[in-house]
Structure formats: C-alpha cells, structure tokens
Image 1: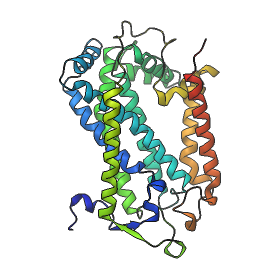
Image 2: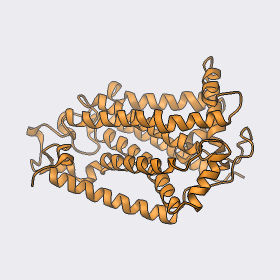
Image 3: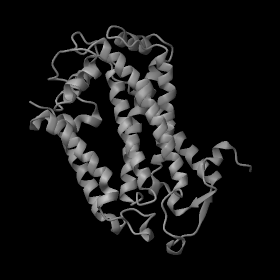
Image 4: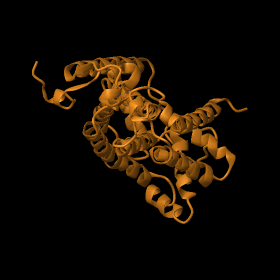
Length: 344
C-alpha cells in the first residue's frame, strides 16, 4: 500500500510496546481529533450566534430549538470541548508519569502545557458566551479575580470589560478572543507541538540496547489504530450529544448581580473552593499560578527518568515528579468534590 498524505504525517515505524493503548491512552491523538470536532462545530455555530447581551442567549435558544439539528451541533460542540480538556489533562499526566518530558522533549512538554492552558481559557470564554444565568460566576467572579491583581488589576479589568461594568463590550471582546486570539494561539502551539514530537524522535522509548521488545508497527497500523480510537470517540460524542443536552439557562437580567448560587465550570470548581479561604488574589491568582509553575518546573528541578526506564509507567528515576503531580491532582480533586457537595 502506498502511503498518502495522512500516513506521511506519521513516522515509518514505532516500537510496538510503546504504541499500546494502555501506555499512550490514545490521549494525544484523541486531543487532536476532539480539537477538530470543536473547530468544525464552532464554525457552524458562528452562523447563528449574535455576540450581544440581548442577542447571545436568544440566538443560542434559536439554534437549539429552531434550527434543524442545531441542538445536536451545539451539544457536539459542548461535549467535545469538555472531553478535550479532560483528555488533554490526561495526556499531561501520562507524559509526567512515564517520564517522557526529559531532554530533548522538555521544550515540547512546555508547548503541550501551554496548549492545555489555552484550551482552559477557550473553554472558559466559550462558557461566558452563553450569557445566561448559568455563567454568572464566570464573568463576575472571574473578572473580579483579574481586578484583585495589585497595581495591574484595574487596567486589566478595564481592558477585559471595556468599561466600568460588564456588558456588551466585554461580550464582544470575549467573543473575539475565543474565535480569533485563543483559537489561533491554540492552533499554532498545537501544530508546533506535533511537529516537535516528530523532530524529537517520536514517542519516548529506551535506547535500542535497553529494549525488552524490538517489535515495531508501521504507519499504516498506527493510522488504523487512530481511526479506531476516533470512531469510538465519535460514538461517545454522539451518545452524549443525543441524550445529555448542553446547559441552557434564562438570559441574564442584570450583569452585575450576585454570584451566591452560581458555580464555576467544572474545571475551575477547585479555584472557586479556594476563594473561600480568604484573599481572592492569593487564593484565586497566586496559588493557581504557583501550581502551574510547579508543573512547568518538573523537568528542571526534579530528577529525570533514566533513558533505560522510558517507555513504561511510573519509572523510578522521576518518582519525585510523580509524587508532586499526584499530590497536586489529589488536592484539585478534593477541592472539586467539596465544591460539588451541597452546602446547607
């Protein structure tokens, strides 16, 4: 079989042991696929979305209830974006817990971390674009966190909001960032990230002399496995989009209202819970930023896995990094569960 353009995007062969699903989790390829679904469905939504406080919730309702199959496109966009954040986070965990960020892959690890941060911001700005009562926390508490930054906060707040109070200017700015700024940055960094995977030698494996299994699979088998993973992801998306609709609430009546009964999107619930500890700048800005810097610094300040240990889960050489990331995940999961518990 002659390789086509898609096949040429893959290396001619890769080690069979490290190509197993239980090693890669398919997270990298699934992230690319889900990003494509988010992009296509988002473009379709742009034909109907009106980025004004009055028009945004009504246009979403029109798309959901009046446009043929509009509800399905919107649900696909919602669920693919949620799964994208989850799968990209799983990919980060896999890279750290297999030690696959050592040089020459250290820079690409930072690129991937940057992509994950941008995906979170994309999901957050897309969440705000609903402009209904369900997103009140996002634009009130979220932008107030920006305003809490000493010296720079007032300027950042004015730049985001476009005035003294949230309203139409803020919505059009979030829409612009969502469609152009963040999406363009995600595309550039993701493409660079994929290019560096090939340039850095593909998947992390031990040197030939340390490998227990020298069997390899070719690019055709790799493409077949990717297609099968995409098929299962599509089935999952179709089921979720068919039976679990994307959130929809009443239009916002007053942008500056309270947030007592509102909730952050699921991936920021842990920050919402942190805010209960005190100063919003410390708990809502400094602590999350410090966590991000710690994750970024894992390849710099903690021991790396020995080359002979690569290609397996939980190598002994980078055990400290595994513990640090595991501790961070436990804290985030615990805070998220606390945020989900009913408060009487």
